[in-house]
Image (cartoon, rainbow, N blue to C red):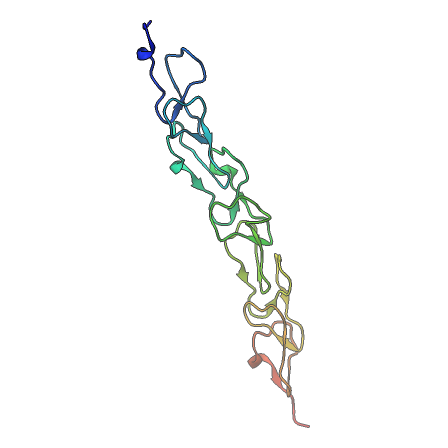
Length: 178
């Protein structure tokens, strides 16, 4: 052994050692990193993503969860920890950490299947008048529903609609004379 501390070496960034007198340092496991030399522990990667690289010496290895997904796991080491926003919700941002606060309820006039970054407009002839929906409803008789409709629009005076899938006022029929 050495006569003084000059024979001791600090662990490099990305590595740590918890035991005194150890001759080797351990790489930080995936899901963690350490930016300072001589560390006795690694820092967990933040929620909202993952760090796949072992021996990481910087938080820059962090990969955010994709849009439409989220993770509340601290120290995640794989994209499998990113979960889909639930049906009826969406997330346009990457790195979301909550299905409740980051995955937003789907807007009126649209629907959201599981894991989507944006709502999908209801097709013409259908509508949705509530938030958080997963399916659109048929337009009602006597009305029309353009693409993305949040409500039915009645056929104008002097016209009528006799089907449930009308998409515009042009689909309404003029009332017969008399």
